Image (tube, rainbow, N blue to C red; front, top):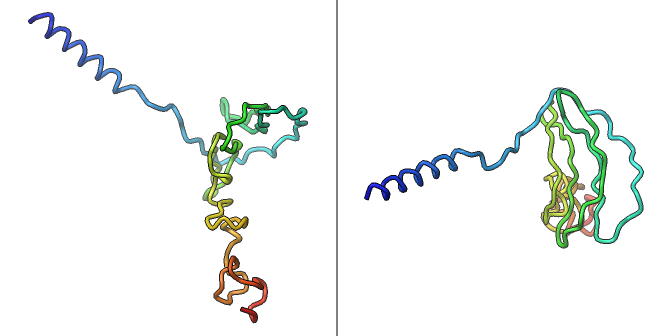
Length: 144
């Protein structure tokens, strides 16, 4: 009986210890300093079954450091979204690149109605009450 209690106590302690470990070490990075302009990279000859991942400015040891582009193995049905810095409310946020089933990763490029026009441009340009998707003359407010 004593061995069983000791075993259960050890198992409970081990479970509590594992529960305290962080699941992800991802940290949001945001700065008041804009990153430098992207560097021009010569893209090597394409490789079948691989996708080119462009270089980007990383934030290491309190400064921007260029990470060179490289090839990664292609994933069928997924799109590679490169690492980038986005300005939000006067600050710069780092968005880590990765694979996604969506062609456009941010709302800026999403196409909800799948007509080939990103949402930010897909509106009623001529204000005639007919959305551009259904308007025969999207730039003429007098034709419906």
